[in-house]
Image (cartoon, rainbow, N blue to C red; front, side, top):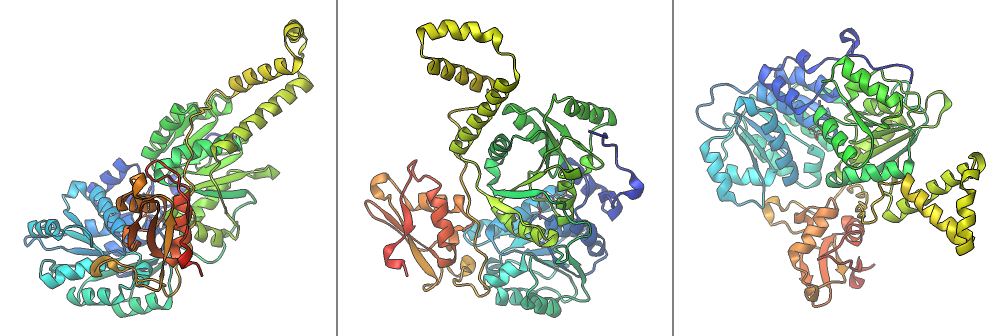
Length: 565
Ligand code: AMP
């Protein structure tokens, strides 16, 4: 360890949230959330959006794009909003995203008293009508349901000054182009229009040309490798749901057995929470974040240096300038918000010819960001399977064996000879050795819990085809995938096992990225069930169901024979 991180030098630092011109209520909300600095997209998008410019941004999930458009919308909200009609409309492709984005607006706008409403298909319309009636500032809607409300006269766009099209490529893929056009017809001509898309196919360009006026263009997913790109470090990623992340981190650390590791989190809250969780799980973790005094940082670093701690959980800001010699592993607890940040982080290992390992825990929806990072760094990130309980057991035995080997080669074992000799009168030498190995194994690896549960493996979702094979615009029109693009999955459990349609839908949506409305007819027979899903996601559904249990039981899952081609 050659140096201790010091508080960042403001003269060389990228702009902070306070430099972006945000109002105090928003800065307070960001500080309370533990956001230490803006992500690149926020740095680039917030100032022009505050100035009222239109914007065309290429950025995927995980870049912090939601705050990039939400903060300016909140800041520009007029204090006086007498008629209760929305001043901002955000269109998103899915119900999940509608909920997520409105939660983000809530969190950022809580001190401003902003009224936010997600509206999407599938939710009782009555509740939405009542909320709209009571007065709303920001509506986050899927296009189909937004158009329904416009047609009923319950969503009036006359006061809208900003329209955001979020994940526009997804919306087009889902067949929402006409709905979006129709909605924009109802919005005032004089407005700010913001379009975010993870990819920029010609259709998005066309949409931008038709609806955006002299937009600022921001490209976060750069195609060119960044200067001084990533050093050669073994890079892998694991796809894991949020709920299983702490367990997955523990599992991966156990198998990798790093000399010392740094785990990067997005916010101070996450740093504190994860440090506590990992300590609770028997790891020696220390938190390092920007809210700590220099003295606290020094103390943490000296604990790492002396080997009292072996895991450092940190935010990017706090870890700046940190150079830990014995660091062997960098773990991204979330996919970083920009490829540059990934490169920075993994640059902490693999120095001076030492082998380094970079591990990223990605939620399935962040898979695209991983691809972007691969493109930018020009290096491959292999998607690995989370070690199973059996893998872990094997690895732990290997470690015990290595420790015994070392002891046999190097230690003075004579003082123990008397024990072995006296036991060998009574027992076979092999048995004596086995008992000694067992004790050594348990003593060196006390944290091992035999009851440890398997962590579900998540399959990578195949890329969406340019022309979708199925039409999932169920939002407004009933939710059934069109015949022709669907297939049936056979599940070897049925009525006798107590399986109900909701169990199957729950298992599929819980284990895969497939949403409920992509699931077609469900047939439950006595001993098996058949579920209709789009061909494009059938493999993912099968893999997800095979890895999970339904009604507490493992089932045979395969493509139904009649549907095999
Ligand atoms: P998004 O790309 O908008 O889906 O955001 C990805 C995640 O990053 C969300 O969980 C946000 O809460 C989080 N996030 C956004 N901006 C920041 C920031 N400046 N610092 C820390 N976390 C952030």
